[in-house]
View 1 (cartoon, rainbow, N blue to C red):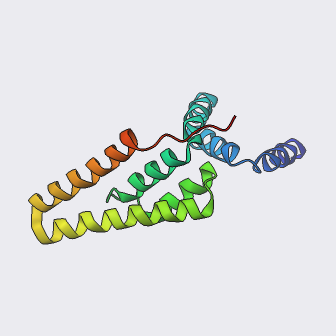
View 2: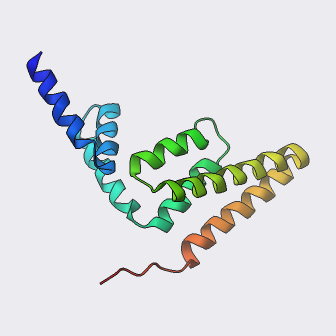
Amino acid sequence: MKPVLERAKKKTAELSDPKKRFLLLAAWVAGDEASARAAKKKTAELSDPKKRFLLLAAFVGIPLPGTGAWTGAMGAFLVGMPFAEAMASIFVGVVCSGVIMTSVSVAGKKGAFFAGALLIGGLLSQMFTGSKSEKPE
């Protein structure tokens, strides 16, 4: 029992860093170190705040089971997003999801296609034509 407690104490000490929380969760879910290494590479891509904001808003904005505000909040916590940034991104995603579902309800398939194309176009235009954040020297 002592080795298990020592390992738990060590893992608990590592949880102070948000990226390590994400990596530990990925390793626990997948059950192997290869998945943890892949998750580490993916978290390195999330260092740009604008990219994090857009990815979380897109994830929350897709009206599918398991992609809502609660799951987005958990994801924001795991990657260590600041509270205000996470809340704004989740809000944008929930509004986008509401627009999609309302258009599906009111206008049927044509409305869903139009809203989806409009939102995806807006997301892509922000990703590719948005201003680049300058790195401090």
